[in-house]
Length: 86
Image 1 (cartoon, one colour):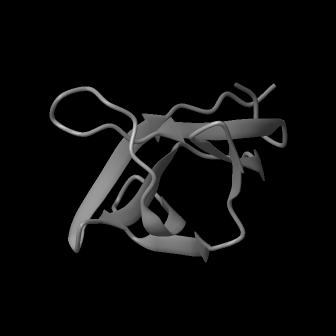
Image 2 (cartoon, helix red, strand yellow):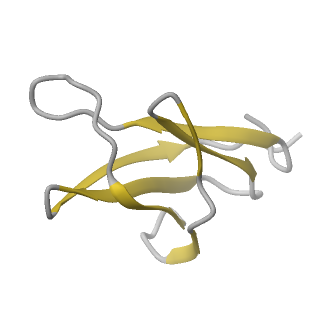
Image 3 (cartoon, helix red, strand yellow):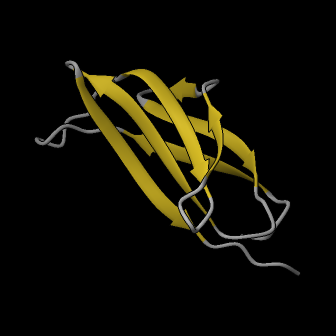
């Protein structure tokens, strides 16, 4: 991915049995590689159990984290995204 590209960040939450779950209070947090919070996004779109957000990539690598609550327990998915500059 290149800096300033619009990318779609996507997650599908699953339980320990591999079944898709629908958490409450879904948020997207974006961190720099030093784990400093850059922004929190709450306007997350959903489509057939998948949650996504169209994000404009910064000019540096970043970590994105989707989180929510299922049965009063937190659930999250986190990933490092490498960014290239042309």
